[in-house]
Length: 209
Image (cartoon, rainbow, N blue to C red; front, side, top):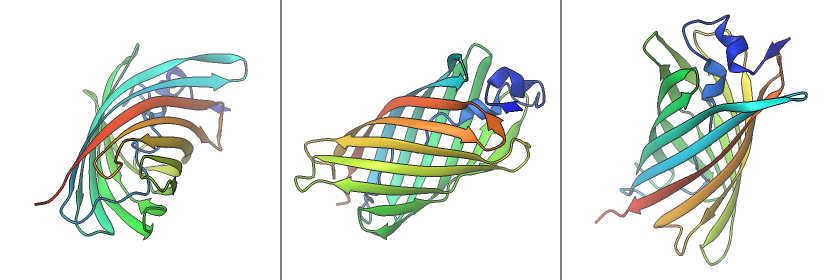
């Protein structure tokens, strides 16, 4: 059976050190909350991933990320994200961009980012449709988000990956800034084991004048 372990995958896909460990954050520290029209967002994050397979477990990678967002309308945003992932096997970069759409304001949203994974040896593309379900509170200081995502790789035969996460947002005013801790799981139906991700993000919004 296939495994999510990076070394096992690297033997069959030398283009990358480990393409399967690159799913380090299930959703990029997002909620269903939308940026209002003309509002910009900047975001930074740190993520850590471990693999679990039967009785085996171990560290996979650490990721540092930065992201930008812009409210085209109140219901349509565009998001850009860069991640640098490092492990004992080497370093890999990720660049993703795509729309985020409000299905139910501040409660349900969908996103369709296209991503590009690359290192010194090559690159590959991935399509990652995702859904976000958020439960806010009346004071606008806390929210909880359940995220679901799949990864469809264009050039690497890794099978489809699925991911779920539980994320939170804390702030004095979530319309302006937020701290976002997150816990996620990534797995493939054709693989044994799973990857667990832990991380925290921080975002700040710049209102349009």
